[in-house]
Length: 554
Image (cartoon, rainbow, N blue to C red; front, side):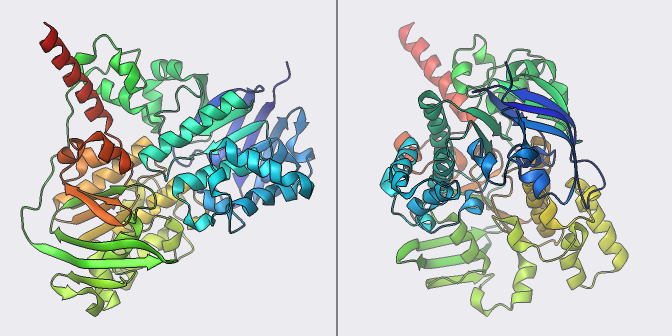
């Protein structure tokens, strides 16, 4: 049977690059088949997507060799836009693919581009929105949607075109835990209703494992080093997975801590609950955490508020942040986390209320002096890039301090090497992969030595090695006395590193406590706040519940 996708000896290099992004790629996908495409940040996963949907070589500044056949026809033989009827892509950041202002018009836009008659559009729009349970938002402005709703809208826009293959490029990277589960459940339901092939690009595999059993593994050289079932890859290629920084499911990671030689691993909490020797795996080693032992308040907010489009985004928030704390800000998409962090950093002014840094009103600080105190990493890395090379981006703040050229060079080379970016030092920041851009944005802050760091989702889009290295550096800075405030959806990071958690919900602080206290909150509260227990805590609770059952029935 002829494969739907047939990639033969694909090689690709960008014009400015010194090495191939993809090298000798060969694989096939058949109608309706699902596959996980895994690999470290910068391995070429998204680039391969651009080859499959025909964007490359048409828009490629570089060279591409080999052939890609979609439904028996070379991608280069499709007319511009024609391939979108066959291959649909939902990008990591859905806002990059939106063109219109409201939901209905956005879905209609794609239909117009493929020449669907106006009289047929209404029904197709309704059908597409119903598939993702977004019909109630048909007339809504896109700007008012949550992150999860925007991902669903992007999905609806693609489904309206009825592609035979759907590619999801890290679709949950910016979503809270519950929105992530909701999107994955939506994909599962769609697979039961309509037939389409599926390529899932992800770093973190939790909840995806029963959607795609087969996996293609890319290494840092852009080569496929494994094509097998996921469980087979984990069993037979574990050392390569670790070496390449490819995440294992969280349950498998947890399981391996106490038994590194275990061959067959549970991939979900449900599988763990049925595992015969699960009671041997209940201990979790946490990072040593410091609380606010100094008692020295460095930043105070009193009754701050901010609104936009006649909607309250931040409501009457009062916080005291103490020297040496490691604070995680968590909550649902759209709960006000990013806005709060921007206000705390002085980037955005509150509509009302007051903020003071080290006893002095924030508005009275000179901008140059304020940036020496506070480092801020934006949610979108591109918002903070201001130079033309990776090297200059990291060196910029050091040059502003008039540090000696040799000192700057040593510091920049060290931080770039640590973040796996040294080989890219001469590249333009905008040419990097999303994961590389994120690492660069954090590197620009870490190199500068500010005592108060605010980071908005610094670990999204990172492979396992990059994630571990980034958190090691932040922990190192924390141990040297820096105060860290991090927005994150990763509950494992909250559990392991944070000394304090601030939970935002609808613009308000609804909880301010230790991670342990948060995990003990009622399940209905955690669900309302779009939070999920870390895997280690879920496993611990399974153990406790079963131990209680045994003790009461014996």
